Image (cartoon, rainbow, N blue to C red; front, side, top):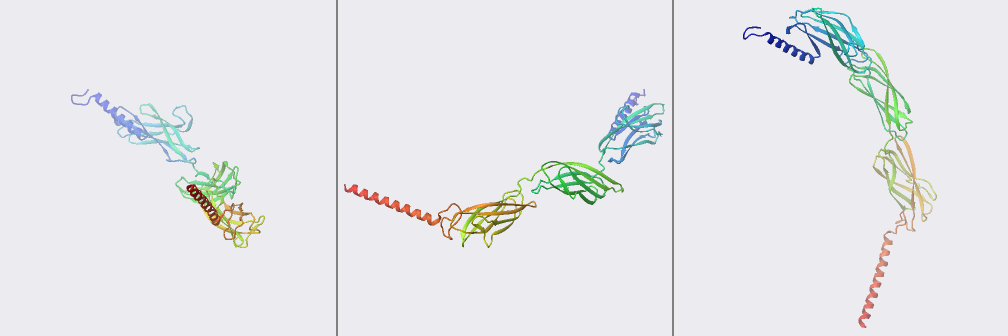
Length: 413
């Protein structure tokens, strides 16, 4: 008990406890453990545990180091006489590695004991550092600290994407290679092998791939069918340290058929008789969702019909999705007065695959002259319509005359 206005033993104990609690909070923020060597707050020793490198890979050894810092004002001496790395916090959990080398920590110094562990898998890894620290008074303190670190995949990461199956039953396999490391890779090459489809030219070579960069490799798969597909990608490269590495990754994808491929149909067709031949006009319309190339419309031979000597075939060219282009072709007919069927052959290419079909158009002259004849179900034309109107008007006039005559007779009566 001190005098009036002085610090009592209770006040001193409370002050030391407050300092100790503050150091505990500070230590928890930086991942350390605080030990008390005596009743004096100045005698606090700090234990810290660190791991290096910050982001190891499967091929790296992780160094775990336990350090004890003893303040200059301390009158205690510590000995770190054991460091054991275990799988769990329990002292009976499996041992990963142990280091029995001791380190003496005198006042004003820091002593450390380190151990290295092997890493076999990528992902988040947590181990526990178990330390026994001897104090000057023949006592001991056991400290357990968790150590968590992220283990990166040592190889570049791979991803796979497949394009829809085209008309030739082909698909493009796109493999992205991401170098997540900070250093460059040299001599990067890939070789792909699929489960169901056959890959043309399965080997690709890219050369160098800088750290943090992405490279894309494309493979052509043939004989593809819709459904799940498994692709094994073997990758080889040389690290910045000159180490040659190889790995095989199994990737999954789902092959889908192309939705709404290009399709050419004929629309707005008209057949007219001109100069002793039939002229077919219309539109080559692409009703599909992809482009068609090499579109050609031509007259085929049939009963009484053959290609004309001039412009029996019309080269339309490329027709984009949901677009059309006009065409005109000529057909030679043996008997222009008889009904005939004009066959038109449509040829085009979709995704490198040739397609063809034949469309038949009916034509009937209806006994009309070359100047006004057209195909279809025998339309009457303007002259025919005028004739019908004349007959109707004559009939109405006759009925009106009969009506006037009868009205006059009734009046005379």
